[in-house]
Length: 332
Image (cartoon, rainbow, N blue to C red; front, side, top):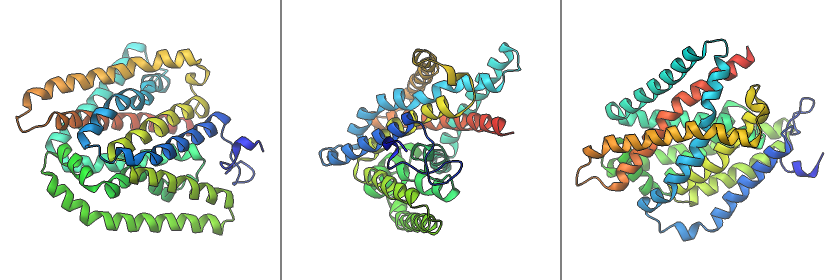
């Protein structure tokens, strides 16, 4: 096997321990780990950053690079509804997308704590199911849970007070109540995570899949370390923009049937930005709508955090459902 595939050699059709990913996806995996390793090295420099400073640093990368991978959603809907008349397809696609986004935004106002928990669980499952392919890890439910929880559990454990402050802003509750909740929950979650990770290692060893076990032992601890030592919003942005968003676009371009498999680089750029720009525009509209409700006690950063993460949650739900429908259609 080409040396470029080492140490990411996991699975093939004939032997389940050899990787069949493309060189581009293997390179992306290497670069992602390299970026995370680099930011871990410089993390002491960022430990003094307040949550407000982090927000200012990450809002633009998340809004552009992170949201970018959802820019192909109109094209996924177009492929999914290829038999429909264009006007009907457009009305259904944008009507359903905006309708689901509206429901999520309403839920933030009506049931904020339940919405936050639901958003984290949906994100956990989505990260796990999507990003395991980046590293060729076994696509098992337990692997999904162990891997997908990294960008959520890491900040909760490493920077509990800052994470509690952010959660408090999102659910419109005092951060001390969130902090007490995290102090009680974190030991249990960490114990469950360690047990799950250990079970994965034992299963791989029991099946003789030593290359896959090595991949697991390299990848997951490094990502977990980055999520633990980086300030929470920096950790999330690094994961979301570098690993998740770019990995999703590579997976689309190489693994799924659809017109995007034949797009040139120029076509990708031209076709991703309209929907991405639309999402950013909706965020600006949300800022304008929520601004009059701000009180003297509401910090600028608190307002920005709600617009950013309420918006991400609103985009995540239709995004996941749309790609789930596409995958289901391709496997039927």
